[in-house]
Image 1 (cartoon, rainbow, N blue to C red):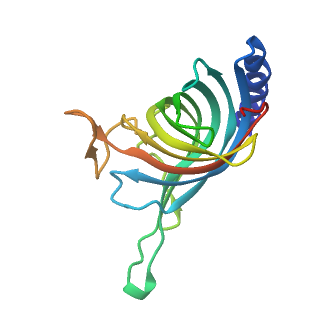
Image 2 (image 1 turned 90 degrees about the horizontal axis):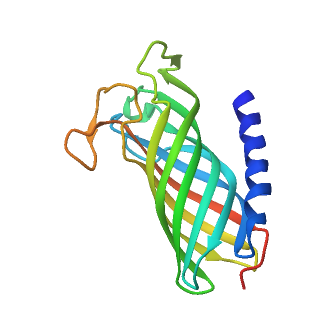
Length: 210
């Protein structure tokens, strides 16, 4: 709860300070849901839902180019439910929560569509892990800081309301040490477990863009 209060305070400060520095700045808030999985934990599939919410400040530097800075609360993890009809009694749940800071470049296709890409840092605020309904204690702790790449598309719905579809994928091992089921990602020797997320959200911006 203390971490969430700190996030809310930081978000308010972020939104108040950011947009006042120039006429080309804009800002807003966003909220949605993420489908998540952990690549490398042997439980494939985006079976765990998580909350995604935060705010953004952006700067339009040309007709086609925008840079956007975000601050968001992001619930990720993995879930595997039993399938009793197939005599599968295995159950697993991993919840991991972050405050994440993406820095994005957005390319404006037209007044309705924008593409985006950019990195983000995630800061661990808490986690919970269980196997067959019993909490796992003393396991491999998640890393305190993670590094992701984001890519997505914005669809303008009204002058201030937008729909966003985004992928968010870890580039570095999210565990503090290697774990069973490790996979290789991006470059040689980069083994570990990785957050993979599909995010759908609605964004409300404070100023018109049309």
